Amino acid sequence: MTDEFTHGHITFLAQADGSELPALSEYCDYVFLDMGCDMGLADAFFLRCDRCFLIGDLSLWHCGSTAAGALHVREYWGKAPWVLTAFCTDAGMRYYQATTGERAGVIPFEPDPFCLHHDMLVFMERVWKGE
Image (cartoon, rainbow, N blue to C red):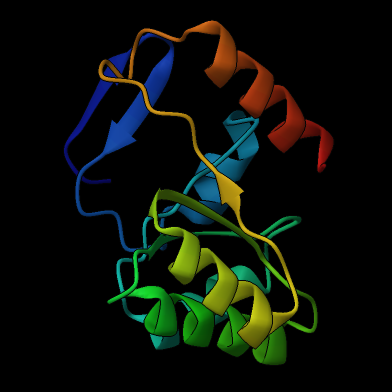
């Protein structure tokens, strides 16, 4: 395994490459993989996932690449990922929806990621329920 630290009952692995997934799946309820921008590397791991989320930027200058990534995952995985964004513009959101036919979810802003406020708790409840 790679270097790791735990904060708030969450274990973070530095530079995990996905080879840890089988071992992690045995003792973790949820595993989140940050695959960066390398969609080819992510393909094989998405096939093992129950649910797929893509975190993307829907600002006007990045909405095209986020939409392309979502379409790639849909084609490869056979179903649409849930795309979430913390950065968006109205024009970027409209472009994404027109291109993919899907709406993206907006992640509520939280200045301290380890301190959850009401909006984030409501958002996370929707994520776990698959809404």
